[in-house]
Length: 378
Image (cartoon, rainbow, N blue to C red; front, side, top):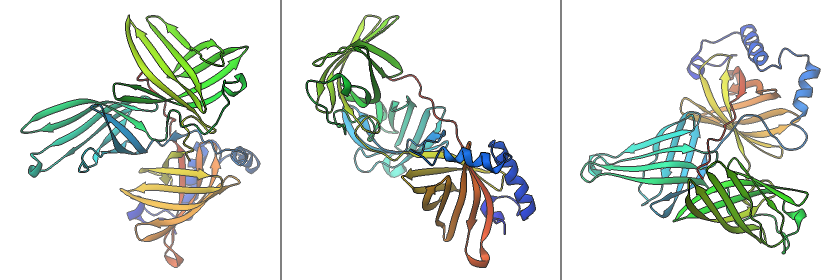
């Protein structure tokens, strides 16, 4: 049977019509119309090694909020264009709700008359790792208060918290790799990723969208970037799991100095091993509306959440041999999915209910554009 009208906001379709629609959708993903042998080949690239789809990476999770020289725990939850931010400043702050579009975050919460209609807002730009912008508290009696704010993810750039231990003095062979980096200045902290490479005694460090170069030294290195009116100079001393030191940034003759901590990680910078979550457009029956789905894969275990009409269908299962399968609940009903990895997402079948009451629909999890980082905040 096909999925109900109330679930999809679309008329019920018969099996033949549904089959035509799903073929059209998969064809749009550039795989369904191909012979089965070629489709299996496309799937095989995901069966060996790490699962690396070409879709948007979820940046939801725990953050640090740097505000007025203080650090507060925060959470960011993003589902497509919808965003929720909570900053625990005094234990009473309510989740601010709003939008995240084109790397611009805008969220707010308005308290009631008992709190003098206090309004809290965050407006910030995403730079590929951090959110940089303004935090506002608008009180009808005391007026507005505006402060700079930086939201930095907990899992990114722990600085000195690397998972790789290296000998001292530093050997050249130990330098290459990815590091989590923290820049600190006046109570403000910025996290970033840095990648090191060494060729013919020359060290190349990529960070913040810039390339820094210096000669290798086992005791202290000074990667340099110089372009136009900007010159950055790092002074880095090796530590057991990375580097520490300073960054001197000069722009138009104005200098800023940051404290620097770097920790080398086995699977990326920062020392936090994180199972990344990937974001898809979920389309049922080949017709709108389009929902947001999030998939997390750890080895062969898979977790899938699809937000439908403001509520989540949570499924747990596996991803193996190019097949995603899982079971779970949506509202008070059982749900299940079985879908094959195709060139730009997944395509398969979704069911809701059980026994003779089960409703079935084609489902496509379509890749969303991978997020491109804006200009770095530092």
